[in-house]
Amino acid sequence: MIKRLYPLMLIFLVSGCKLAEGLELMGRMPGSGQIVLSSQVKQDLKKYLASYGPEDFFVSIDGKVSKHSICLAHTCKGSGWDNQLRLSRDCERKASTSCKLFARKGTILWANFEYSEIVDILPPRDLCRRALNYIPHKSASWGVAKHTMEFVRESKQRGYSVKQCVSHANYDPVPTRALVEERPSSAPVSNTSLKPASSVKAGSVEDRLARLKQLVEEGLVTEMDAAAKRREILKGL
Image (cartoon, rainbow, N blue to C red; front, side, top):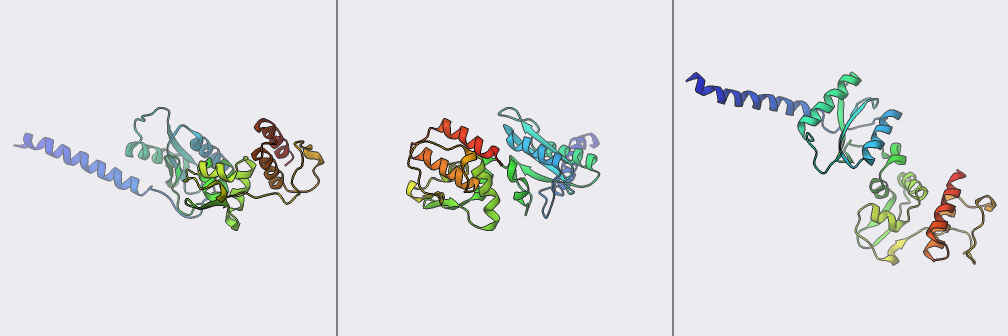
């Protein structure tokens, strides 16, 4: 009789262990509130976001230690609870404090995270979604609210146009006439020649990049020449 109960007892034991692990992991699910990431954690996050298959990214609540996993193939073994539990425990052993899930599948899950802290390492999708003022199927333009300025500036420094940002953000396209691009305040260029960056006395970097983009759109400058000029402008920062 007792022997017959062994399999049932074993099932209950395994289920109890899994339940305990599940409850432990639930306590480490996405963090929230203010957190300042250390320079090393930012570098780890940059590698994670740029990887082929980002899985889980855990960070200590003081922002000083992180552990993450990525997939190097189409399938990834151990990308479920077991992997998350292992990462969180490794993170806590190294940090000597609690660790929480920061990102999953390349998407940041930390509630109320201040994205401006990592604007320079954000992937194009996340950057453009915060830089655009987008109305589905109707219009798209650069955001004008104060909290979007850093994302708009970074998008322009990367050479993105509004149209490109709509694509990067995985948004549905809008009619070309509804794409509102900023135009430089200077007078239109009357010829195809581009003056050296050092000869330009007025205008912000954004104005000069916008002017360069306008020339490309009008077919007055090739993309290759524009790329070289864009590097020259950004080098002067």
